[in-house]
Structures are given as structure tokens and as C-alpha cells.
Length: 343
Image (cartoon, rainbow, N blue to C red; front, side, top):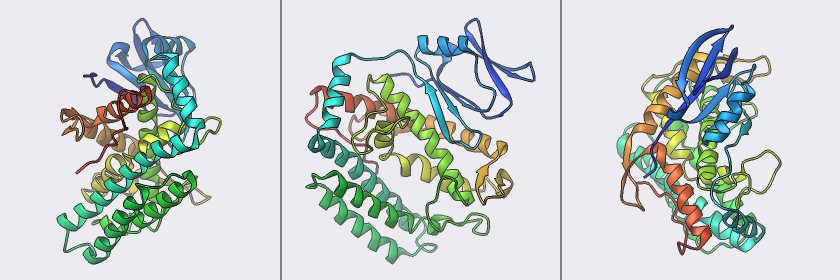
């Protein structure tokens, strides 16, 4: 079993990262603020302006540590990937299947089925946990629609149709998202998904969490020997980690949406953790990013029973395990890719 190592999140924009021996050093105005041994890290996520030293970039590549760069608002910019893992045969197989629309649809169908299944579970749980505070009848009706859409997906072999079903299911799921916000509705009100830029506090949280999840999935795919830029559902686009976006469809609701709802409903985050821009954009400020990352790291340490492997694993390892299962399927070791279906 792979060991869950740490991710270093640097959210203060004015910092600079350097290498000193076997340590990454965080500098602020030329003063050392933090020193962490490289062998304890699996990735570094840097939200800043000044950058990192070439020596640190090289050390991360040699040790298989993914070094990712984000804007302070959480938009992914680039990543310094580690030395390639796996073998060229696996990636060549991935590229061939990505060019085959029929095989791409088969693989993409698994990702979307998991997304629909997990979205339905989240809605069902809301009706069970808070029957007096949510519209149970409306949510149950949407769950039936999601179940019907999942049944339709099982025989769908066209990528465009798959994307249409996924979009329709996502819209229905998000139509109940505001109902699951149980406190702080004056500050946290969700009227629909918006991005680039997010226009309210809930969307600002979701966009930031999705960026963290995308980086985690890209790292997991690289560790499994796959190319995170070549997807099946999301097609090739320069600079886009398409396969990471494919893989994260299974986890968006479980990892990100539920964490955002938990933080809002438990008042672990408040209006003071956000900044509003003149163009209407809303972003987490430095204190908000730190609060979300702290909760994100704590969630990654929670232990669950993997539904396919029947092993207890921390949440943070689930993307890595799914990436390995995907690699095994592409190599022909499995008859089908087993998506992550949580309950």
C-alpha cells in the first residue's frame, strides 16, 4: 500500500521557495519562515507571485514531488512534473485508446456513472440527515431522475451524448445545493454554478477546492505512470490536465462539495474569509485559503473502507488507488475500470 505523504501548501503570495540541502525553505522578505525535509513530501502547491528556485524544481523532479503553481486566488497555472513513472507501453496504450472514440466513451462512461451515483448519494443523505430542513419530495424526485440517467448511461456509446447527460445531471444536482446550506444563508447563498471568476462565496470555495482536487488527481495519475494531459471524457487542450479532470468527476461531490457544505454549516468559515473585487469576482483571502486547506488536509487523513478493494485507506489515497486501477485496466489486467462508488 502506498504511504500517504504530506502536501506543502504555500498560500502567502509574497513568499519564495528555495532548496537548502535536502529541505525546502519558505522565505518571506529574505527571512526563513519554514523548513521541511523533502522526503516527507509528495507534492508542493504554491499560491504566489515570486516563484521557486531552479534548484528546488530539479530536486522535486528527481524525487517524484509534483510542484504546482497557482494564482493566489486558486487558478491553476502550471506544474513541474516529476520524472516519468511507469513505462512507455502504458502511455502508448493510453494514447491509442484516447484516439478511439468508442473506447473513450466506454472509459468516460465509468467516470460519469460514478459522478451520478455519488451525487445521488449526497442528495439522499441530505434527506436522511435533515428531513425537516430540506425539500424531501423534490430531492427524492431528482434522485429518481439521476437513477434513470445512470441507467441510460449504461448503454450509451457516444461521447457527446455522455457529456449531455453529465451536464443535465450536474444541473439537477446543483439545483438542490442551496437547500443543503443550513446556516449562514445571508452570506452563503448558492443560485447556480459560476466560475472564471466565481461570483459568490460558495462558488469561490468550490473553485478553490476543485483546483486542489485537480492537482491531487494529476499527481496520482503521474505516479501511476499515466499522462494526466490525455483524457477520455475531456479532450485534448493545451495546458489542460484532461485525464485529471476525468478522474476527479468521481470525487467532486465527495471531496469538495461535502467539505464546502460542512465548513459552511459548522461555521468553520465566514464572510470575513472572502474578498470582493470591482468586477464582481469573489475569492478566498489568505485566511480563507488557510482555513480551507486545513480542513482539506484533515479530511484526507480520515479513514474509509474502499468499496472495490475492501481495504481501509485514508481519503487522501483514494485518487492514487483509482489511478492505479485505471492503469491496470488500460494494461489489460482488469476487464473493466472499477469507478469509486461511495455509500
